[in-house]
Amino acid sequence: MTEKEFIPSSYIKSVSSGKTTYKSPSNIALVKYWGKKANQIPANPSISFTLSKCATLTTVSYKKLDEPNTTFSFDIALDGKKEESFKPKISTFFERVYPYFPFLKEYHFEIETSNSFPHSSGIASSASGMSALALCLMELERNLNPDMTEDYFNQKASFLARLGSGSAARSIKGSIVQWGEHAEIEGSSNLYGIEYPHKIHSIFQNYCDTILLVDKGQKQVSSTVGHDLMHGHPFAEQRFNQAHENLSKLETVFAEGNLDGFISIVESEALTLHAMMMASQPYFILMKPNTLEIINKIWEFRETSKTHVCFTLDAGANVHVLYPENEKSQVQKFIEDELSPYCQGEQFIHDHVGNGAEKIN
Ligand code: DP6
Image (tube, rainbow, N blue to C red; front, side, top):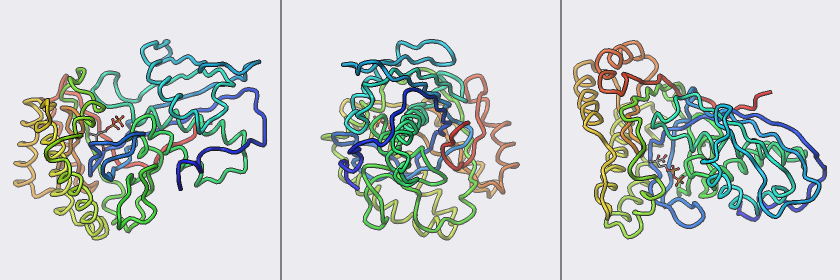
């Protein structure tokens, strides 16, 4: 697939108005995307667990205008309240996807969105938010072109979500999604995410992820700025190669259900991501003292309990605690008793691997 194949040649139907709702999950990267080229092309391939409970619910209502507009006509509301501050981000998204959705200036859109996780919890909503919006717009395109195949629908939704936010490309399907070209992963693409095509041991199909809300404040450095700092970064090439190698290693780890192998790749990826931030110019640190307290507690507990609990981080201070379902009761007790005091307002969210976005009727 190339970008051109996502440009529709013509539509067979005409649609005057309608409404569509999607619930799209967040995802947590195991091999991290950090660094990108023009047009949201990742500098290295990444892979993630699709989550389940952390999700965005978006409804898009559309009405055909009498005359096509010269700009994009839309309103956006978060939790029922108009959210002017979201408009520039959505305008940029519309600009980027316009070549692939030539109908965009012919409609007025009302976008209503809400997140299942608390607002300003420090959990990034861009992956679930952008994928939900891309899916709603794809549904309108499917109405204009009902012959579209399911595979094309999902690929194009991921392609468009990527243009909104890179990690959103991995939030269309479950349970493990890979995005970015990799020599050993057939069908992998820089343009969209694919369901991991190799064997996945059952232990990974329902893996648990508890998100510890360590710091709910605004991040000092956005992901976009962080990605940019990988240009001219002294360790960039080694890092990008390492991501390819880690994806190669994960193949047997996933197939065999090798939990020790999984832990060593996932924790190293998390710490490498933050090491890249610390070695950027300008340098920055997104971890907080409690992030480190939690990591040390997890290491101690893993040693004494002989469980397979481990951690990963995204671009912030929050910690994702990962563990297999069959160790859930022991690990969740540990989280509640020993890790929650390090969270803001003792807040955490128990989530698990999910099956991808859903259309809501
Ligand atoms: C650390 O997808 O938020 O979470 O493409 O600029 O929107 P943009 O970046 P974004 O970056 C995510 C970075 C990460 C790692 C990951 O999810 O792979």
